[in-house]
Length: 371
Image (cartoon, rainbow, N blue to C red; front, side, top):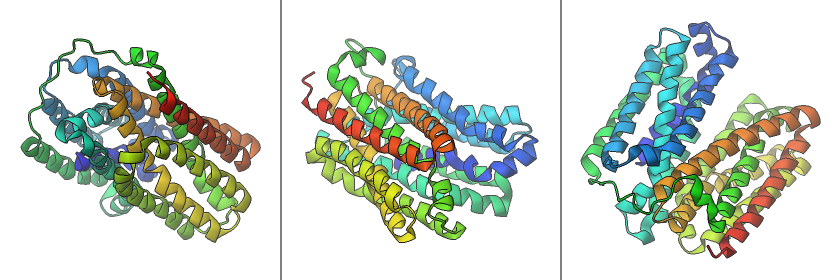
């Protein structure tokens, strides 16, 4: 599952470091090439909302294998695409695979390990996500320079094939559970505890990506970091995030809500500190390392919350969580961009801090909600 997560996330963000080459080869603008990310995100969102209903009585092992096979097909189509339209079809397929996989991740972990081991299992699965976040962009840039953008896409296919074979051999059969009494995605929100938790998660990811999306221009224009220093700082965020993801599994087991409240509080403090001390390279580097350590590991906490809050509706709940996160990332990045262009980085980082504080308050309210 972790290897599959790595291949999926690497495939999702591979175009980021290859936009210029993709645009030139397919005879489109870089902005149009960048829509490869938007298309995969849109199909991930749609799939996450529909997967629990569409899957029906399909054995969940077969469904996971089908989604992994779709990832292989997607990479092949993208790498061989003769034109922009075919390339975008390949990107749509990866979006379906992403939405389906992440929607089922918590439910699958709950069926593979004892309940007390679910946080650790989720941390391992998200470890693949965190590792891909660290190396996807630099790996894509490196491979693109050596074998071209098409070759870079092809290099992920063997990983996906290994993941497919590994799942085929190691996953047990997971027959679909009875749908009797199951709730659909949106009726889950009638529970105050679920609604408050989803709102907290939404605000958390909005705040995170309102700031994270604009880190590079901040580092270049405010911190005045060189290109090499900027790359090292961004790499540090990823490495710290990978470490945090490995560590949080054992911590969240006994202190779930404390962590869900503490993480956004820490990130709000970091956002404010960056406004005050962002001109110092050393201080900024330290703050961003801490940002990566706590921020990248947060999804493990929220997936653990989902598994404990909706043990009988984990698939529908997983779909809802994926949809909430996708919308939050897009909204946070968009709103942060408007403020960054109109009022400067202080407004964007202030927005991030405010959203993080609101997320902490709602997580605390979710912890106290009875139903």
